[in-house]
Amino acid sequence: MKKLDIIVKYADLNRFSLAYVLSIIENYAASRRHVNRIVLAKDVVREIERSDADVIVVMYSIMTPQIFEEEFLEEISNVEMLKRRKNVIMIAGGPHASGDPVGTLTKLKFDIAVLREGEVTIPRLLDSILNYDDLSNVPNIVYKYGDKIVKTFDYVPPRIIGSAPFSRTFKIYAPIEIMRGCTHACKYCQTPRISMFRIRYREIDEVRRYCEHYVKHGIKVIRFLAPNGFAYGSDGRRPRPDKIEKLLKTCKQVGDVKLVLGAFPSEVRPDFVTRDVMEVVVKYVHNRKIAIGAQSGSNRLLRYIGRGHDVECVYEAVDLCIEYGFQPCIDFIFGLPGETEEDVEKTVKVMIDLARRGCIIRGHTFMPLPGTPFENEPPGKVHPKYLEALREIERMRRLEGYWKEQEHIAEKIHKYLHSRCIT
Ligand code: SF4
Image (cartoon, rainbow, N blue to C red; front, top):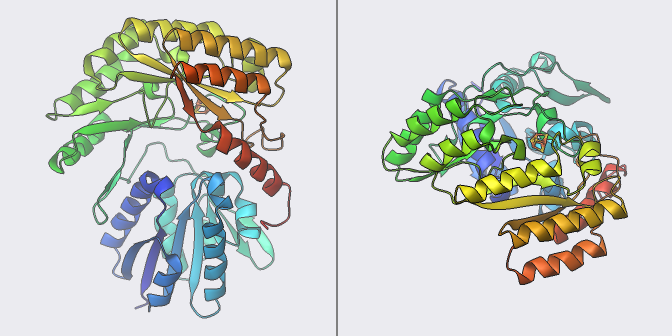
């Protein structure tokens, strides 16, 4: 029988998404005798050298900013060289591979890019690789076939299936994903495109089981992960406080747990911060901050980028948060495509006003992410008027964010997407 080693690349940045990938692989290995080793590796090259398996599958979960790290580029080029001596297959998943699968194969030299979610694709892909089967039967992948690039059929399962938020082997306990996908269409965002504008929720019983598992392993602060934290159980357009309550109440009954919803690592849309939702949330959550995506203080720009809410809605959400004793943290994106001087001035005014009301302002710079309608737009530049406003907000001690780093990364992404190779 052929032996298979699966090496998963470890990076601090995507430690939590790796927990989900590892849980899929652990489930797979439990029912397949040919899996020799599952390795979580910081140094992939060393693990390939060590391996005596017939087939070595190396998996990376990639976010676009990671591809500019020197270490990453050096490692993938070393792995490429090892392919001359070993039977190595390089698989990339994550938002970058979904957004730019062709570049992932042609510029980064991966063999297979996994689009969308891994639960259905990974087990079928591993079986096909080991049996030298036709990969065209594996959903959601892009791969090289001779000098052609082949994309297989899309499949988004009706439910979130088969991946726990933790790895039993490597003891990584990630925030519990309660929702996947989005029905909104903000033009800078990869999330709705990866799941083809569908939303699915994890069943409450399943979430409860994970909470019990976390408590058993001494984890008392349980964070929920969702593109829109207050959308649980909804149609993606209007909140369902009854469903949120059922979820939180059930999880609270698990024992002495502190639940975090609507704050890191998730945020909420302002139109989901309603009085009914706040009445529920305030009873159950441990966090005292709520992260809200405003993105701009200009209604014209909000319409143009497809946010589906206005500035007034942000103010209503902020007022409600404060009324219920939460500190709002408000996200803004600088340098969005089509941003005019007037948009900048309006946004500056709103940011300063919100900071004075006690909000934390979290600044971001627009990055043209692959697979989004804005991927060909120029990288975001932080207007001097923003810099001046940010200094003022910093003096109030109300500033957070990585807009400086993102401005550099945005430039690199733009160059990368418009070049024929990575270097
Ligand atoms: S930014 Fe949020 S609301 Fe907009 S498309 Fe992305 S996940 Fe959905």
